[in-house]
Image 1: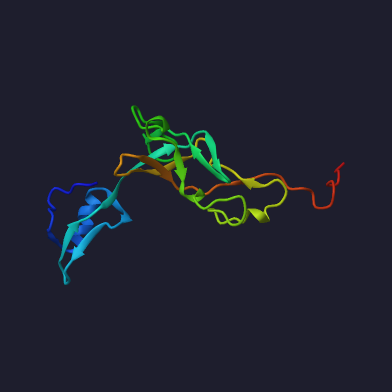
Image 2 (image 1 turned 180 degrees about the horizontal axis):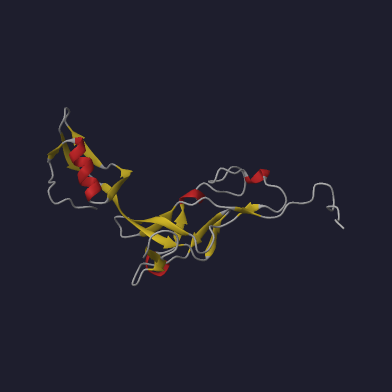
Length: 181
């Protein structure tokens, strides 16, 4: 649940005012019945009813050890990172920052639709991969922008979006390659 101090039950707001108030609160409606809008024209009366809100917090994290969570899906250990200088480099683990120990493992949006066959979240059909090529977890050390979702029951999930790479080896097309002397 979110609280917006200046909005009371039965308040009248424009759509823009409502949108701005929700953004300022850092919340996103997740579904359910949400809020009821009553009336028409440039203003609407809103009524609270069974909302399911998620508070969003963004942070940078460094991908750590992956753990298999299904076919071509992984969960990831992570620490929160901070940027201390311009350009490449300058990343440090944030002192007293959040980690997988405090907020649970990170999940990858790009892996949400992954399975053992067919087109995966990165757009590659794994059935067409040659040789020993397979989808790989996001590599250790990769820094990503992530979002922490906190649901109304207090449950937290950390999500980021990074396409998976592919690794493996090809079989020679015509036997052994020729030896060069």
